Length: 453
Image (cartoon, rainbow, N blue to C red; front, side, top):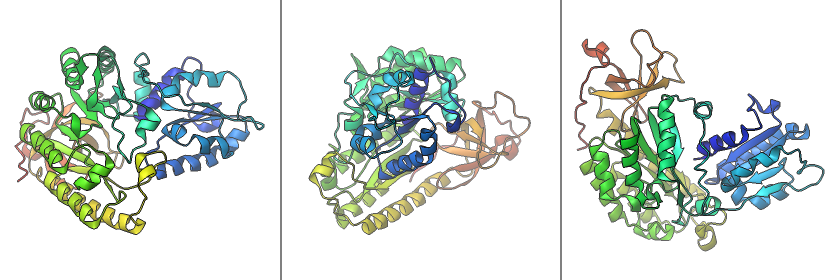
């Protein structure tokens, strides 16, 4: 979502500014920030130190995004090289930074634009295809934000305080943006929101938006992130099962596996309810890949609580996971109510064990594809080896492969058949089906069913 907000910022500024190739060339330098974890804050502070000499030379520096909203006092009063701070709902004010004022210099306090909105969705500001390509470098996949803010107020999370309450874009504006992306050759979109599957605008719900995109656009693949388990109705799961273009990849944030911890986190579901949703998805959607988020060391988490998280991780059989040690965020319910009482060394030990078990699980699940022929959409050359390319299966798994023959301009975005020869916890490796069997690389071959038993 921060990447998409950077696209919005670029679109707003393009009326009276040109993006430079380096900070040294710029009159205005913008740092778009995150407030989820402490290391994100430290990265910004370090970057400000690096840019200090440019600020002294006359460049204006602005902090955008969640860190500006969450740490306003620190940023305004720590004598940092900053001219203005601007929250996620205030990006329309970006044009004012080009008005020639010298705030932030000679003792003048930085300006701040931090009002949260119950209405702002930027639905009338559509990033250009060129902005998408400059930001991401991937010509066939684009991000599209459909929903902003969050009403859940999970105890550990700062998002409701930095991005405000939930509001969704009009359905037609999302459809029009995806149509425009398809016209520029985009094959795959990732629908974004703080609680993306709670999308609702007037009478339209998330499932209605997906149906509209399937009916009114030629987009080949639709993904979404990040959802909340409470918003997974069976009709959404059944639509995924029935429509190949609504891809069989689901991100299902668990956060913790003990009911006592889930209650303190204010997650509004039990471990039993969570596992039932996972079962509903797996039983209905063929070859689905499910990923998750997990926090260890939340205040009050006992060793028994942590063991319950390990149990749920194993029962859900996640294909991948984003795993973190708890990091207290200013202004959250947890920061106000719960002392951060799990020792850091305990957090680190639990996290290391959790990661180790998940990597083994991911490797085992990926290894089930060895010897199978899969269909994957070609994305781009591998960053590690220019002789190899990256393709992605519908369920999100990446396949690294050496292309055969001459590479045409249409190769990126094409669908190829690949025989999987090896697997790691992160990726699969394959060869074009022609190299494995003498058949063409675009063979219309259905991949064999993958059993999870």
